[in-house]
Length: 388
Image 1 (cartoon, rainbow, N blue to C red):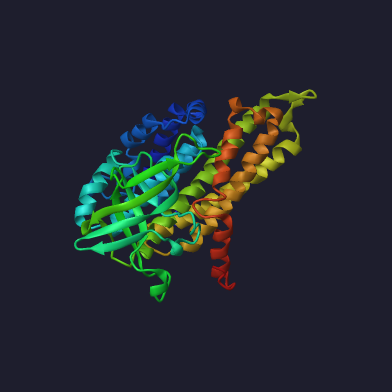
Image 2: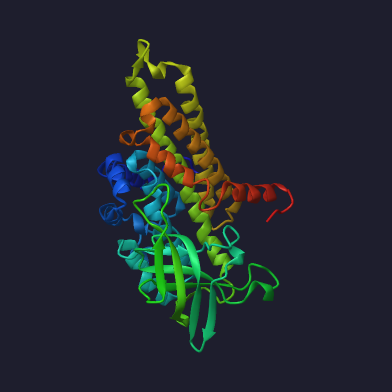
């Protein structure tokens, strides 16, 4: 693994920094307060080619990897976009692009990948359900074969972008869990058109990131052709895993990116704000907590790079992805917390943005997998008994 940035990575970092300068904290403060999606930011990412980073050149993408995507996400987050820097890329440009690239038919690749690369097609990923929660193997959404079609019925929850997505990759059971030998068997993935009359989306009021909706999705008697099956029937678990590791890597980039944004904003404030005749940053009680968290973020970013490198080499990266996500989130949360403390009472004011970054980064404790489940996986890899 080479620790020097490639010319491509340096170019991505520079481009991401330029985009973030156009869509800085004031932009996201306004979008958050109004509950508005930033179509301009989405389009700018498309113009820069970021939606196509993981898509092969033959489908009009850049043909790069998760290392480059991680650089793009962290830089966008850290340079002013906050969670939006990861949020607007992780589902379509990350998960859906990877799923279709690795497991789609040639017809599916030709239909979807060029549109994703151009930023003209948005995907949501239908995994979580109200009853199953973190236990994806217990999904109850059913896909019943009927001639040359499948009939889909079920309910999903916390499905981001489902209110505005063109398509969804829907996780279903084609064989009930009680009828399979292993819980990972019997799962199938389908590409669904979101304008189907049998699909209804209902936004969930939430704590933050209101420049994007997360919704309950109700699926009733939705019929899709066999051609919409992504991968093989009953063998959708491992294609799903191929999409989940990039999501964890992306959220690791969010953790360090948001944390660095808050820390650097607080450092600037601490150098200017004077109390008792000197800048408050001159007090180690202010500087050390932020510095310590920043050091932890730097270490977490290296683990994210390792996870991304292994992913790009086609090697298993589940352990590294979970370590990266868990450590980046904890370090980032501490950085934002201590940055908010440095602002004192003004850290609670919307005009300084750190309170919004606090709301944003706390989601990463819960998604795309909870910290507890990340540590469950890590513990199992270390040799502890499996607990899930």
